[in-house]
Image 1 (cartoon, rainbow, N blue to C red):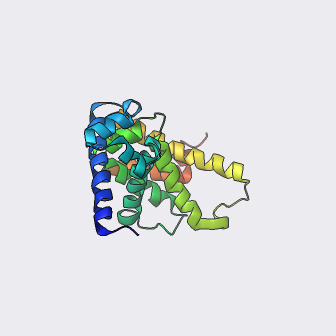
Image 2 (image 1 turned 90 degrees about the horizontal axis):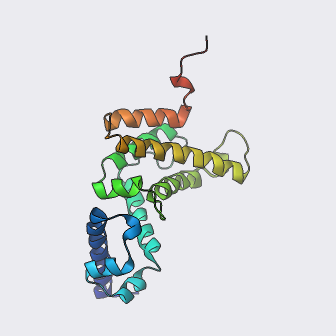
Length: 195
């Protein structure tokens, strides 16, 4: 068990790395950030970085998990109700829309470490874990289930990325309602009925 000083040092080191990362990501793209650049900016020894993280990806996982923990702790109203797909999609969209530019950039920039894809996958994995076996109306193989989940994730992620790319052409609440509706019902309810 670490003493209080050790815990404080760990917290300070991680805060310094996070602050350095926020500065770097404002200046460059994710694929250009290295452990060397990050540790130099943070004033932390490279060996110290590797005491905390196996690689940059582990550091990014820590950031992503922190974002997801914040969402589930403070924004998700029905985390134990996996069937509230409309509500989950709306709340998650509103949560992402309210994030600082750094998080927006990370979610919208597919790189070697796709924050957006991982964040949406982590969100769905938490709901699926709560649902257990009885989530789907029809029995699916694990491969089929993963394909359906990938479709839902990609629709929501691409919707968010396109909304940002287009300069947020509608209010976040209107966009959240639309993605919630499409996530739950697909697009059929939006189309004019066949003549």
